[in-house]
Length: 330
View 1 (cartoon, rainbow, N blue to C red):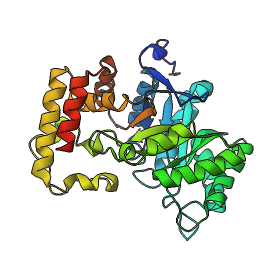
View 2 (spheres, one colour):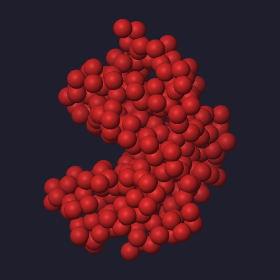
View 3 (cartoon, rainbow, N blue to C red):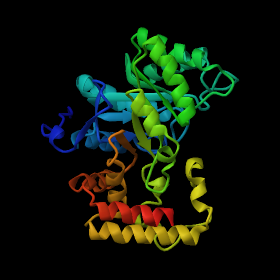
View 4 (cartoon, one colour):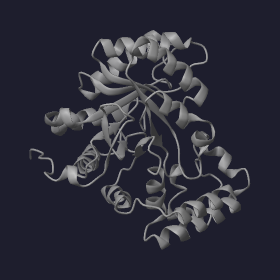
């Protein structure tokens, strides 16, 4: 059966301009980190991806090493793109990244010129694309000078393989340094994809938001639910083997019980807003104009639809915002 996108898809989600650039993205992007790949039946992945598009999500975020098994998320997306989404390419914002382990040997990671160029060429083949809308350096490379990384990304734009470039997991100082090089080169630098959620506000405290604003770039927030902590799953306790992402490891510094107390206090606030904890957490991220899009991931249509309900209540009172900050700061 030939796929036909929902005619009302652009009436379902708010959209945001990335700083003052010409790029417009949905408030929610679909991330394929470890939710869709070779361990998931293709038909299920197809249903979730197409439901996302029908729901107004036209931004899909990938990386060379996304899985579950390395690289299979791009392959999965590529199959769905080829069979269903190719007629809509002009409507789609498709992004990918390179920098974490991708293939054997010393050239299979980080951000040297050869590595970045080979990685994007391979990603385009896997996804059946001629170009991506954003290509990110996935992590800071301590051994390669920033000018080489920046020039490689700039050349990929000039070759027509990427429309914009970005960085991911760079701190504020690193972001500022490479943004200055991009400015000199005239490279269309669009933003930083970084961990950001109610519990982890390091990007606010570090000056990252000011740096991005200064360079007319946006923030793409991944891990918006802190690997599931900001849901109703852990209100009664967090198991010892909880797989916390390294960017959020500090959340356990005061112990699991203290964190569970915070989660329950936040959940109480969410109920008063007629939202789930996850819905309130997603809505909270969009209070900052620098946040261009919130990257969510799921392998379930029902879970996707439940999370998207948050867009029905994006407004916070000053008292609500103050109460959230008081709970988080302890």
